[in-house]
Length: 274
Image (cartoon, rainbow, N blue to C red):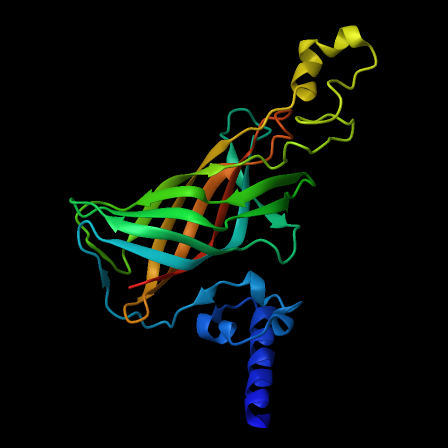
């Protein structure tokens, strides 16, 4: 028992040092730790990794359906598209700094992978911890909140593959729910399911077009696009990992503001039940 306790302690220390250096953790090592050992270490915000050596490929027969679990997406870079001061230049993405601390990773996502008759592989997301509220600080001081998510993701590959290997790329669209809910009230007490109809001193001015957008709250359902590039896999365990790049709209304050375009880059991990 003492030897086992020592091993767990050494593992925890090693993983904590790895977290401080911004590294990743092996899925098997992470599963051995208890909740108290992971608490306040930052490990919960890290996606598992796979060894540098990738072994073989994962073949999938036409019509076959394979479930996947423990899918994890760890953002590492954030960009927001800004309009330039010079109108002759095009809008470009500006890198921002995340303000939300160790609560940015999507984890424990489940779904299925199936293959069509033409060899196209389709990845379908079903449920899990598939959204996180994140705020990004831009160099000019502006803060951009958005709901990082891959809800209802349907991503496909090019036809004719029939197997997942280190050159497989998934691309698809997903739904972006509203950053706020029905019962959220803004600072003036306006909401969708509750609160005031308007917050203007003169009732005759409440229906004017200048205030209508802020007074009449709406739940905006946006669309996002993501690219998942498999760079590592283990055909024996069914583990796949790689990098992702996602673009989605930001928060609109329940329809009061125009959404901004946000780009997120990072790494992902998933385990196929082969």
